[in-house]
Image (tube, rainbow, N blue to C red):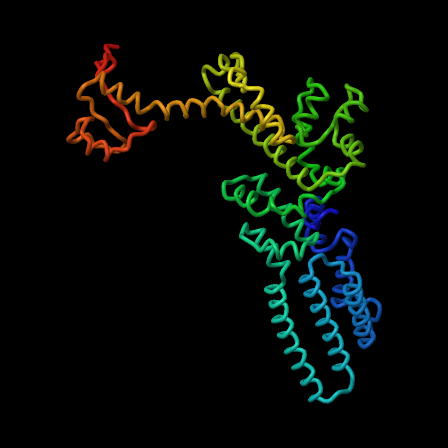
Length: 421
């Protein structure tokens, strides 16, 4: 359920010991330590005077390690698993070489075995490089981590928990540290991968893997806020917490343990988790900006006065321009659209209306101004002002691009005189 990388974040300083293994075999690094101890003097404690028995013990230990790796696959990534098996196979041959050398063997046999062991080592290095370079999962994960284009069909064909984790974690990193390039990559490359975002995970496990972030948000909650306001701050409209409000006392102290215990039976999709990560990142950014504003106002001479000013809360909706028939049509076309979408449509109604009206009436307005100001001249952005041409010059009209953004007709007014103040 939880990826090795997420487990590593929880393990902290022990991350290097657990990152390579699946969740079930997180302890397998202990087996690797046992093999290394056997080769580095541990066998001497058991057989201080018998070199052959020490080498035999090393062969048995490394054989058991390789057999377990091949049968149970404790290493998460396929290429890393091949690397681990081949490396321990080399140790097995090394122990066998010691056994051959300690017994009565001709010099030719010892030299021949040493040469074979050397060439086997070189072959393993070349093979490992080939495995890393040609493995499809490794190349896909590397491309995703580097925010590079990848083959969607190859991804779906090799769809695995390892690749799903790579996509989800890269998306999480993008929303935590957003950039224009990162958000574009998320929208065009990662978001269309439905097989990743439709996968469900236990809500309690998601909260535990995000424990540091959630606890930091809980610490910033307003103590006087209602339980509903605090839950709204944490989950916004991404998670339905109405059942939590009904089942809990309104005066309950909202803690991380309380959240995990309540949502332990729920399941959230990876997309739900991504939306939560985005909201939490926004809360963190907002909190940082509030701290910066507080620091600025603390040294501002009028900081106290600015703090006393009431917030201006304008209504983002435009009731005058709202039409019920249009609202019903939008609801019919997008019945599952959130209220924020309908609100955004309403917000854009007035600007779009004014733009359309201005575009239609501008030729008439321009002709009217030319009639009011005979001999007026038309300027556009970038004109130097040298040798201005009359506005009624047909050749000039074709050369000058008249637009709402930069065309104007200017007449001297009282505001052009020097201000006596």
